[in-house]
Length: 340
Image 1 (cartoon, rainbow, N blue to C red):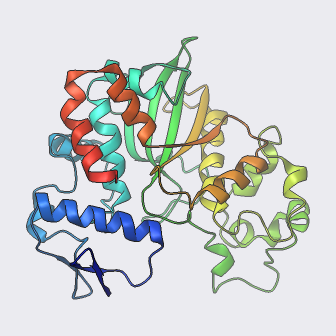
Image 2 (image 1 turned 30 degrees about the vertical axis):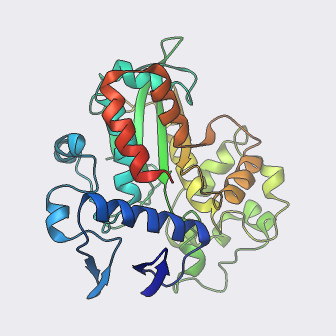
């Protein structure tokens, strides 16, 4: 923990923050102090101003209060773990629910807003998932990637089922980032169980022999199998130009989610009968720190439209533009909380 004095106020913040993170933390804490009180929460017995008190968490904060019951109902229908820091003002899980659940309450209104970034979306498929969505989505119970356990595995923060203008049923998987400076990196590259055989370079060698990847031969994950099976999506010759495996760093999370998406599409099971499956990242409009990984991953897939990124203000601006009274309070609340 580090003490900061900003504009005459004292803030207890994490030790290492970028300029963007510090600015949004201060904004979120100011909002908390104004709307929820100044009592701090604790982590490892240390008080932090960005963490909510136990009483605030019991009341459902920092979730938007009108969706709190819906969030809990959904969790009972499709069990998922609340993040360890759901009671943190900078929680991405909470921010994701706060962005999408108010829109999904009325599927007709939600379709009008979501279409501003997912342009082929005709209407939300309320006959699939939980009236069209699932939080912490993965291909339960199939586990096509063979990487899901009780504590880890590839999933998307939210998935939305929808019909396009041709009447086809599709799925849109979305990862939400708020203050994060990078995506999840490769755990296999850092595993103590790796042997000298498990090399992360050069990428060309891994393309020729997948067993050089610890995730493949040490864990049995199917990431490389699916990547090489789909050269129409993954630009193999571009991957070959990298010295280190391109999926060792921040592109790892993007890669895993996209191979999950394309696996679902290939399987076309009775439970997941989607013709096309897309994956997106939504981020704070002032968070530019994720852009290098997003840009590089777009090159790896040849700028295929199965992946794209957008900022959260695009949905808010569209919600303002349609001038729907049912969204007025939420727009005001969300904008005051997250935008600065």
